[in-house]
Length: 394
Image (tube, rainbow, N blue to C red):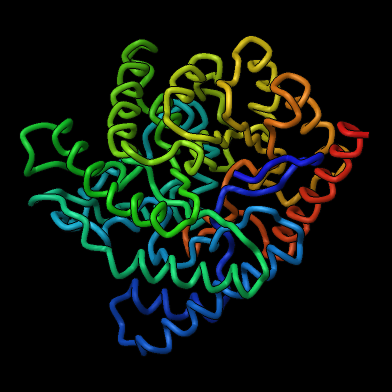
């Protein structure tokens, strides 16, 4: 992780809005239509180089590849890199993405939002195909991850940057809402996923890049599970997944790992989100050197005070979201600086990086803001970090 060295470094969660040229190829891939593979790979390489160049120009200290190599979504991309799954059309009325306490309470709002989006807030389409495990799960995406690493490292070098991170899904968030028809239990299926994904985790670490584990399902599951389940039952579910994740990270240096938790990212009420204070101890069990946690959205901004009671383990960094990805309003840099200063006061200025709440694109075709606004927000992030640095170091 970058050292503070008298200032607050900047980063973000990873997923950035794809350029139109790249989307044409991704659309053809998703639709099963013919396309020029060589032209696609060349376009992907150019697009990664450009997005890294733009991040460097904006002043982002620790950039990503924008997740451009994922042709589905931030979690479903694993379908293209794991064996053992087939996709089936879900039965009418069984769409798992239309469950949850927030959706139950605000059903009319979500009906309008789904119509406006053209899709449920966390899925690609109503009644979309579900993934069913029908055989042994093994990692088959070596070519894809090596391509992503090569594109990203070349882009970093061209932009004059020394380091960056590649975001991939944590086991709990890999192919969520899947159905298991092969393993004796869901626990066995989860263990198989984690061990397969370890190949991807290890490849990123061995390349010299930083590994980011995205885990929206950590917090989102509370909204799906409680009620009727209890908080303790939910915590047991989380603890199991943290244990499995840590097993997959065995032997990987903690300081090379970033762990991202959010409350699902969608632009809804979120009144049934689990409070951070109820799960922060479980977040800190993950063997990571940095924790990226939402902090800018109005349902969770007040939770910076959690860190007044909970001590950040030595050597770890906190990367709070000080920019929201879910509103087109661009935060004022002075507000960003105030948010950063709050965290610096309670965990120490040298332990804070400035980040975003979540990715600006939950999938290639599912963006939260206009590209011009995304860049304006990242500029505000960088300027806010500069203002905070002057105040914190004088």
